[in-house]
Image (cartoon, rainbow, N blue to C red; front, side, top):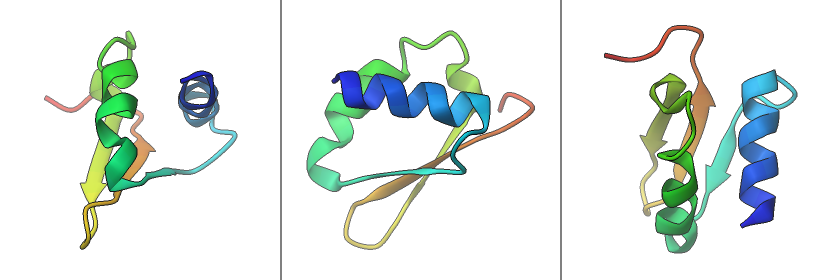
Amino acid sequence: MEKYKNMIEQLKKGEINSIEIPKEEFLQFRELLVKDEMFKHFRGEAKQGGDVIFTFLDKPRS
């Protein structure tokens, strides 16, 4: 879980461009992500096979 917290912070700071989360770990990652105060700034795009790539947006999604 600490790994995911660090990845979320790096993405918010612009240190990394995206995070790829395997299908098997999605629910654990999402549990942390929805608790983040900037949750609406994250965009997840599902890939074929169930993995999800998250990016950080400047403007929150509606």
